[in-house]
Image (cartoon, rainbow, N blue to C red; front, side):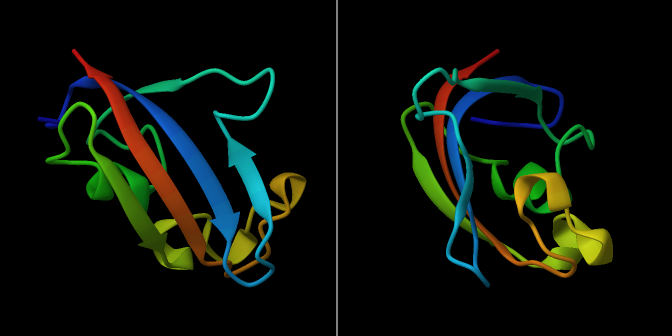
Length: 96
């Protein structure tokens, strides 16, 4: 189970709700699973909180409002507008 401080490897796909455009997927050609430290602020808040409690093999859909994502600044390089809402599909591959 994903708990604070674990090193977690996931497949993740992110879509901007307002535009319907995918901005990132570890499943795209040339991409690899993403590894991060859970619950310690290394990723956006909505992802950090939303993945806690997941188990290996579990898939979860997260709807992340701007205040738990990239905020009013957005992330223009990825096509995320100011105040953008994000949908992520996360699949846990490993937990250490």
